[in-house]
Length: 73
Image (cartoon, rainbow, N blue to C red; front, top):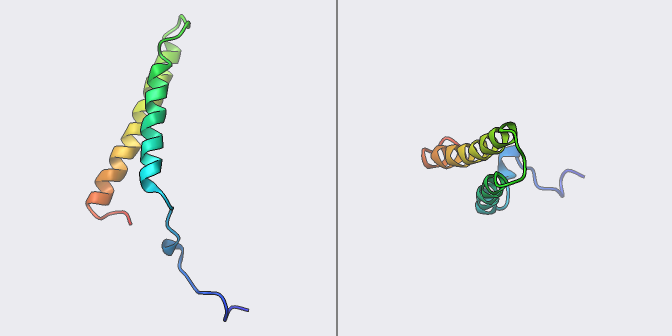
């Protein structure tokens, strides 16, 4: 059974579309920031929306820096 299947290591199974993931994260952050213009009265919602948008952008920037330095495959 194993003779017919190729043997691969887990690091060979790379995600398919990194660029689409980055674009999706940036667009999601922009949508979160657009939600600030709403009919809510408190600032708690604004803090969460800005915080989540900053977190998404930090992940995208961190991933780009790590890939540029060769620390991620």
